[in-house]
Length: 524
Image 1 (cartoon, one colour):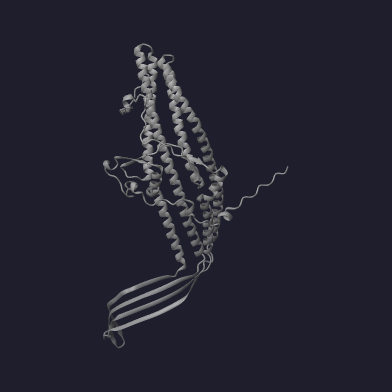
Image 2 (cartoon, rainbow, N blue to C red; image 1 turned 180 degrees about the vertical axis):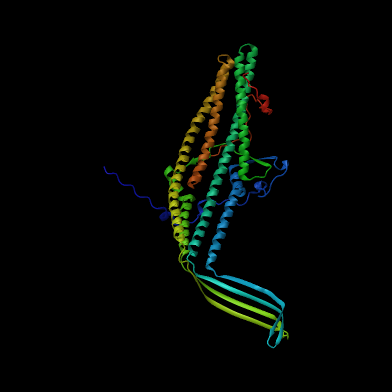
């Protein structure tokens, strides 16, 4: 059986054009103003620098939702502002290059005015006797010229303007790329904060459970129905859970300040997550649809095509350096003088003026430059060839990114299902182990093991949800699509339900003592 040959892929310049233009409509525009409720969180002055401790001491914890975080990032983030400034710079550069089509007008006033004054004495002996001369000069002179130059033939003008226009499109594309990256970073930072909050909650519940287990173990030991080993096992588990809580609190503080840095919040404000970690939704497009959408909407591919166009334009500009340049030049000169000059006998004060105008063509042609222009032309053509290879590399990288995020999304989807069952099972197993321990039919070891299994299961469940939401955000960034079926919000009560029947054990903060106090080896 003869296998059919695959259909050749269409070329990108035929699909997108050799000089693709930036299309801001494929991306929702960035917010430019903050909602009234978020106005106090506006970014501080760009050149502001704290010099007092009170200026960096946190005095406000501000709960934020995901929508608030995205809005603050788009309005406050300094990197996005810098990218917007680069767009304006590229536009100014394009306008400067377009000015090559217009004539230049120069005014030169070398004498505005000039005074010439002096005296000269001379003496000579001739056949008739000695002759003496005395010359006195006092003249004011004013002269100016106005020159207009218009380049009729400039072989480098068109390619220079074309390269500047492509650079302007690149700057706009880079802004869109930066906006996509910023939204992804803001979402991921918020999900990291949600996960750290869950880790703190899990750590606190673990410490509470360990405190209860230690209290029961000590009570049974004092009653003579348990051994010292069971008390030691409960103390070990409590120390382990306290270590987990300490690490979670540290990760929470770091996640909060990381988000604050990304949002460029005031120095005295720290953000907190207003919403708990929940699954955002379901990704609707298939893998193949996601890949094709990424090829259509990702500005990185357009950047590579513009690199090719810029290199070709610069190559043409280098060839233009050894072609003839033709300019039309018009020069208008005007001058006026006033003063006197006499030799022995004074000459009356004289006033004079002059006006002349000249117009002509100016031709310049670099006939031989040692092959420099041709070599630079070849270099730019080689740069264009390199950009073609970079396009292929970027194309393959985009597909790999989409596939990795898609497969990771599926994996985390399954992890949510499995870890949910794991948490339910581990919680029931811990409840039964405690009942068995209280009835005296098992040991503290079983309770400790089941408690540790529940903690690990809850940690994996929280990580699965956060990782799933991160992959959703990556799919939006890497495909340019926003086709997510949002989950139906849960009907939660306005007040936190009370833990009826459960013993509330407060988690007391542990004092932070110097590490040197525990430097000794506990084994010895």
